[in-house]
Length: 427
Ligand SMILES: C[S@@+](CC[C@H](N)C(=O)[O-])C[C@H]1O[C@@H](n2cnc3c(N)ncnc32)[C@H](O)[C@@H]1O
Image (cartoon, protein in one colour):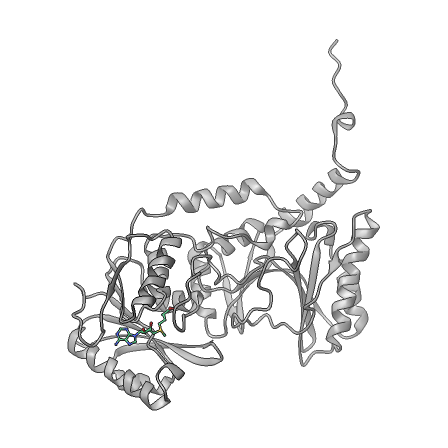
């Protein structure tokens, strides 16, 4: 008779590990969760559109982001694919709150062991708006204590609270205090968000870590770079798919041209970076590997139509070239020194996306307004029939551009409210 070793004699896992695996399956993988893609205010409808294209059954744009539902692999996919979101949150609890005890009870009912590794570094951010809850610092402490007690009661090493427990809106303009995966130590920090609005409150866990606009390619910043999520939003607003030629004539470090290259090649923006969810006890490496492989297989080898990046500044073009290389687009963006007001357009028509200089670079708001007018003249003269996407620092300048079928989105950028405008040059 062959002796079979018992499961116990071969199980080198710590006591309770099997139990934990069962909980992970039941609490983390079996159910659908409420997920929330945080966006810069104004980008919600574009992000909802992205989520529907990704296969979400419903994507509800609400101020500051988009609510959708899905299993954990949907959270992975959203992090991998969303171009206009800042982060993706997992809702742990959403509840009516009348008294302090409501918060304590709900925080204690979260199966924290499924979401936080033993000994994890944790920060708690609190955002309150006309809430029944008060005292952000104390809320952060209590929620952290609930997580800590839960892990300790299961014989697991409690988490460690790290700094940064202050205000944090789910609304996110990308001015990001949660940058940097780690606050010292080996393990990246996890961020719990507590939000109280009127009589409701929620507890969420950030699945992204560093802001999603940090794709990892833009190490050479160039002058006044546009954030990647805003650049992608402008392209999506203009229905850019890569099937038409694209020109970025004020390219600077190349963000618009590079985001266009990623869209045109169907490249997932998150392929080259890490995410906070990969440090959750529920993390399934094979599922993540499969999603990444699928994304790699879906990518086209080259953009179907040319992408041109132009600028008058040689150092800006150098930055653009270095960034394009890091984004995997070496030789796929045609980079050229040219003055928008003298150079001929490339063969088209196609889409021209413009992020003109502004602010102290130009001297005054009047100079910037004049520049917007000159851009309008140049477009009407040399680009009839082209579609145009523009970053405008004052919405009223849109009228001077004379574009047909114009649509706009307002979004914050670098402390300013900018407009993303899309339209067509008549003729
Ligand atoms: C706001 S920056 C563009 C930033 C860019 N979108 C990015 O994300 O890095 C404006 C750029 O316009 C360039 N520029 C200024 N006047 C120009 C002109 N007449 N023709 C072409 N480029 C010009 C500047 O050199 C600068 O790099």
